[in-house]
Amino acid sequence: MVSLLLSFLLNEFLLNEWMVFNQPTLAVQIGAVALWLGAVVLVASWRIWKGSESELIRKIIHIGTGNVILLAWWLQIPAWVGIGASILFSGVTLLSYQFPLIPGIDSVGRKSLGTFFYAVSIGILITCFWQSYPHFAVIGILIMTWGDGFAALVGQRWGKHRYLLWGVQKSWEGSLAMLLISAVVCSLVFLSVYGSTGQIWLIALAVALIATLLEAFSKLGIDNLTVPLGSAAIAFWLSQIMLLN
Image (cartoon, rainbow, N blue to C red; front, top):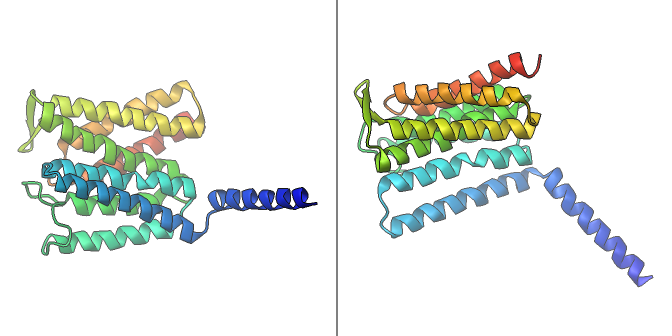
């Protein structure tokens, strides 16, 4: 009798745990995101304490916060939460250009609205795709965070072959990093949604090429808008033609 009761309680516990992660409440969803963002801030703060260069700290925040979209996708966080967060953070970043609300994030050594565009692009992508095709929002945001983020780091640390576009200096090494990482990101997301087909590799390569061109031709931080929106739009258009028809 005791063993039966223990077995029943164990089954109830496991069922409840399964329900939490498969049908999480809003509190669980927001709590998970808050924990992740808190971890990103802790890592960035530790790097500040270690005396790391400001560009590395910016990219830790740039890449780390963007990865929240994977958590949001997995936990099926409602669109209004992401849109609301985008509007809030957009306002904070605009104020930060006048007041040091987000110290270090905007100190890029050049005139840039990149942090503002970063927040705006997330809101636009969630608005356009989250209800029916969330993976396209994920593709756009991850290409912005990983592809664009590593393009800057690779270009600054190992970029020896420079070229100039619109008065902005780029490097072939950084552009190659952008191309490769964007292709990998797009391929992995498509594999998780559609499985392995020959078309997804072609789509991933096309999306990566467009994203790399958009990053190269953008200035004043607008690549944080053109790259995610352009990548998601091209991925959606090509998938409609090659995968869903």
